[in-house]
Length: 146
Image (tube, rainbow, N blue to C red; front, side, top):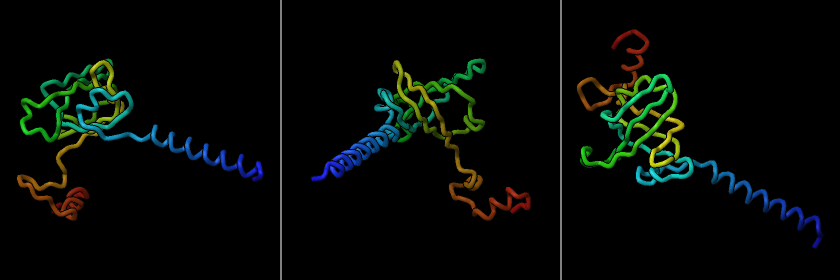
């Protein structure tokens, strides 16, 4: 065989292996709280906020709180994971129903780099569990009322 084809084939194989490895290193996996507690690489985890454990230091912009499994049957006995987040606290943090965190564990604490707060839907009807019509919501937001 021609040496050019062998070298070209090896270069292609090396790029495919390198690309696959790079892709695997950049993917962020969703994990349950028990796995996030020991994660050495960046992961995503979702949980409900334990508002009894929230502490905010405005000088350091350091938010400390704990989360527990969103599907726990008894939230009083659900296992908590301590979380530290450095940065601006989202304005709707107090109304949050749950939170999605990106980060990794350090000394038994989950250090979050990013935080996405999930709040009750603004499309949900007042006093009901039904969702409002999107047209009504848009009319309300534009000021024409509904």
